[in-house]
Amino acid sequence: MGIITFLSFTLLVAVISYFSTRKTDEKSSTGYFLGGRSLTAPVIAGSLLLTNLSTEQIVGLNGQAFSEGILVMAWETLAAIAMVVTALYLLPRYLKEGLTTIPQFLEKRYDVNTKSITSGLFLTGYVVVLLPIVLYSGSLAISTIFDIPGLLQVDKTIALWITVFSIGIIGSVYAIFGGLKAVAVSDTINAVGLLIGGSMIPVLGLMLIGDGNIIEGFTTLFEANKDKFTSIGNEDSSIPFSTIFTGMMLVQLFYWGTNQAIIQRALGAKNLKEGQKGMMLAAFIKVLGPILVVLPGIIAFHLYGDSITNPDEAYPTLVKKVLPLSMVGFFAAVLFGAILSSFNSALNSSVTLFGIDIYKEYINKGASEIQVVKAGKLFGVGLAFLSMFIAPLIANAPSGLFGYLQQVNGCYTIPILTIIIVGYLTKKIPAIAAKIAIVSGAVIYLIYVVLDNTILKNTFPHFLHVQGFLFLLNVLIMILIGKLYPRKEAFQIEYTREVDIKPYKYAIPVGLLICILVISIYLVFS
Image (cartoon, rainbow, N blue to C red; front, side):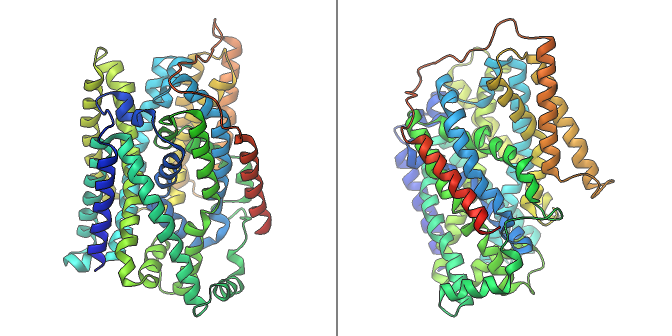
C-alpha cells in the first residue's frame, strides 16, 4: 500500500510539472535557466523552502536535536533574518543588473577571471560536498522508511547504491531536461505536501507521548527533557551561542543571499515586488522550521533514545513508528520530493554556472543560446553520475551530518561572500584584491579543516568562529590592496531593464516584524 501511494504521488507531481512547463521557451538561456523570468511569489517561496528543506536538513538537524536539543534551531530561525537582508539589499541589485548567475556580477565588478574562479569553487563544492551528501542522506531516509534491504533481499550497501542511483537519475531528469521552471513547480507542490506531512510527525509523536493529548504530550516531553529546551548553546555544543555573532550570520547570508542553488529562484522573479514577497513569505515560514526539523528529534530521543545508536536515524525511525501505514507512502513521496529538490536545484545551478560562466566564456565564445543550453545539459549528466558514484562512499561520514556539511562548506562560502559584500559596499577595490581574498580564504580554511579533523583535534576555536575571523581577515586584505592599488574608475551598477525593480511597499515593515519574531523566540527559550 505504501509503495503504491508513493509511486502515485510522485507520478502526479511529475505530470503537473510537465504540463506547467510546456509553454516555457527552454531553448533560450533565460527560459531554461531562469524559467523565462516569470516566477511569482508563491512559487519562489515554495521553491526556496523545499530547495533548502531536504534530507540533509531534516535528517541531519533532527539528528543533532536528538543529541543536543533545540539549540540547533539557530540554523533555521536565524535564516529568516538573512532572507530579509537578501530581499531588502541584495535582490534589488541582482535584478537591477539582470543577473542569471551570481558570478556574472563578479565579472562586472572585478573581471572575468574572478568570475571563473568563483564558478569553479561553486561547482567543486556542489559535486564533492553538496550533491553526494544530499543523495546519501536521502537514501538513508528512504531506505529506513521502506526497509529497502529487506524488501529487495540485499545488504545495506547494495540497497544504498540502488537508492542513490534511483534518486539521482530521477532528479537529473527534472533538473537537466526540465530547466528551472520544472524544478520550481515540482518544488512548490512538494513544499505543500512536506508542510502537511512534516507537521503530522511531531503532532503524532506528541500524541503518542500524551496518550492522544498533544498538550499533555508536549508537557511530558518538556518536563522530562528540560535540558534539551534551551536555545543557548554552551562552548562545548555544536552551536555555541557566541557563534551567532561571528560566523553563523555570515553562513546564513551566504546561503540565502549568494548561493546560486538558492538565489536562482529569486533571480527568476517576474519583478522585484514578486521576488521580495516570495522571500519574505519563505522567511516567515522558515521561523516555524524548528517544528519540522528540531522537535521530532527531541521526540525521538524521548521515545527511542535507548534503541537509536546513530542520531541521523532518529527522524526516519520516528516517521516509521508514528505514521499510519496508509500515510507512509505519501510522506515518503513528499520526502522523496524534498530530496529531489535539493539535488536537482544544485544540479540545475551547476548546469547554469557551467553553461553561462565557463562554456560560453572559454570553450565556445560564439555559442548560440541553444548550444549553451545543450552544453550545460551534457555537463549536468556527467556531474550527476559523478555525484552518484561519490555518494555511497561517504556512508562512513561522522554522525552529525548537517554540522559536518556546514564545516566543510566553509571552504567556499566565506571567500565568495567576502568578495560579493565588499564588491557592493565599495567602488574602487580592484580585481587582484578579490582573487587574493578568494584563494587565500579557501586555502587557509581548507588547512584548518584538515588539521582540525586529523592532527590537532579540539585545538582550534569553533569552525564558525574561524569563519568569522577569516571573513574579517579577507575584508582587511581587500581594503588594504584597494588603498594601494585602487581601480581607475569607480564601479557603478547599470540598470538592464530585464524586470521592473519597483519594490514591495510593505517590504521593510514585514522584514522588521520577522526579525522581531526571531528575537522573541530566542528570548522565550533562553
